[in-house]
Length: 353
Image (tube, rainbow, N blue to C red; front, top):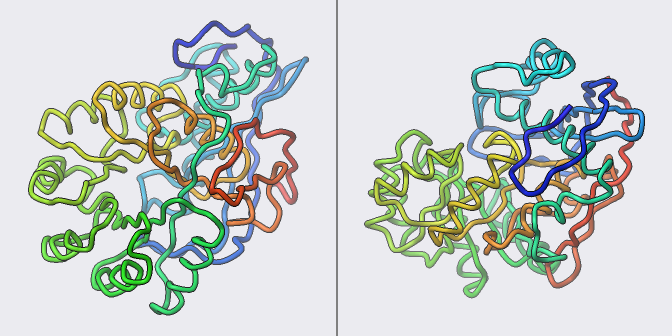
């Protein structure tokens, strides 16, 4: 049984015995608020690939509700259990329309199994060029400006190299202005998850920001290209780029800016590498985005962040940023704001269902 990896080098076939879906609920250390709602706990969906001589794990990036994307945890679990996993166990890929996060989790588990059999790591197989990667952090919408400043201060002291502020309509300018005034030299970006109006976008353009991420809805590539042309602040695409073809389309429309690349959102490691390679060839500054991942998903994110085209600090917080106890050995960040590249390691499933 073979996963769907990029064309790096051949990996051994493995005799797959079973594929299982596990769900674990982990409380967040603190709630995380965005324009689409507030996350209090992570309903983690994992795929476990089992063979005679090893195992592999993959994590699904889907959130509890279809707010960030059309996928959500219950839907992804059903697609995996009813369609993708039976097809793979029967020896063929399976045909479903959409569902990139579910597909990515399955392929990650199968690839992890193959890498284990080959005695290598994902980073080495992909051709990673660094053994440590630069870290940025996403800061949720705070209740007050003072609370926001206190949280940003803690992240700056921890060593993060870039801070991204989640914003929402009607609550964008004041908090961003306060952070910019407090840290004039800090790399500060904002993320509106497609919810900004033209007036707010223009006002943010005067604050010397590092980037403005996904200010308009994902499908509005024409509007995003227009905004990129008229604003001095780089426009970063996230939800708008779910494939290399969509990145081609954005470039053809004249967009030039930054790119937030999330392997779960684009369908897995193979599609992520294809987008990375195109962005690298086009000179698009790119970073790896986070999805409140456990150590299983973080291993994939960190390995991708070590590729040559990832030129900006990625959202790669240590385990303690989200969870009191991670599912793997904890990921830690050094005071210089970097995380070491390593495999996930053994997985522990407390309270799985």
